[in-house]
Length: 402
Ligand code: ADP
Ligand code: ASP
Ligand code: MG
Image (cartoon, rainbow, N blue to C red; front, side, top):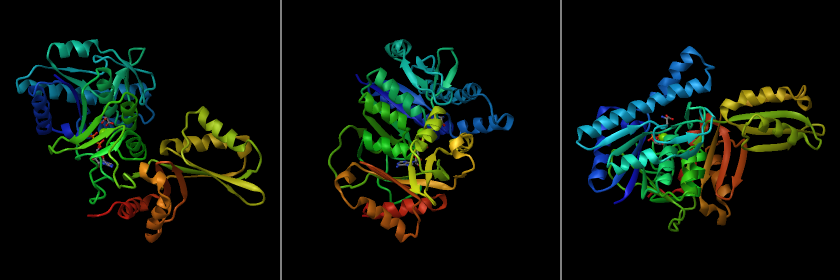
């Protein structure tokens, strides 16, 4: 007998018919002789709707209260799914994050799982119950509810699979797997049969929302093989694992991330320690800096340009304005930018990958504002309005259209 963890995202449980569809997938798996733990997200746009409700009342609400609110979304879907499974005649129990033993740290809105106390989960499995667990949530040392950050249910599923040493972890969603680009934006995108943890981690971090990046990080750490597949179409999905068969593909995917703010400081003194002071100040406030560019300015000065998450843009500017070395210097913060990236382990051994990407952008007359590279990815910062066109152009250049 195998233990299978199945996770269903918001669109897979969006309404009564979809909940019944999920119940059938789960009960078929159980009837085939497996133990099943199911992780679900909130229905459809519930999480966004709850956030809007909060914003109407208090845009600066305490993060603890936001988590108290947002965990309600998953409570609705676990109970409804349990009722659907009950209707199909199988033993089932739904558990909130804390009931399933999810202990997290206290960073409300972006909590990290510290451990899962599996006693209850194991006891329910031993009673032959199908166990339906609320994704995206846990409890901290003060007995307060926490959430794991947007898209966090993927991480809940992987964490359970790791803690219970499950035989399989299946992530069901509204597309058939991981594609070479978002299939909703690039219809020619191809489904990948397999992808490595490292490549998937880059894709997820750089904007492919199909898997949450922390879930991939955790899957790699605990060697949990993931299968990403459709809850609506029973066809083979994508396997995410450590090593995959060699393919001729130079790149695995193209992504877009609009969650970018571009900050520039012009005319800084060209002295040692300037970069250190600026980035130390941002680090103190936990502001993550992504791409950094330092260039020669006028009259022996230097200019510094860097990117942060959109929500951190105004905070970073405020911090910089308070700094003595920046006194009187011009600071700008642009949010109409996007990061377009290509990812693939193959590019390491292929000179010319960058130039091919830049040529595709040039052919579309798209201007590159910044560039950043690593062994398995190349990212460019461009105008946000051109992002979709850029993704298509770069995708066409690298992925043969057969
Ligand atoms: P769920 O609600 O199941 O968690 P998400 O909306 O979080 O689903 O993620 C699935 C979506 O991710 C798809 O509908 C698709 O539009 C988007 N997506 C972005 N990039 C990719 C990609 N490279 N491959 C597959 N889907 C992608
Ligand atoms: N419901 C949460 C969200 O919308 C968690 C998830 O979907 O994974 O972000
Ligand atoms: Mg998701």
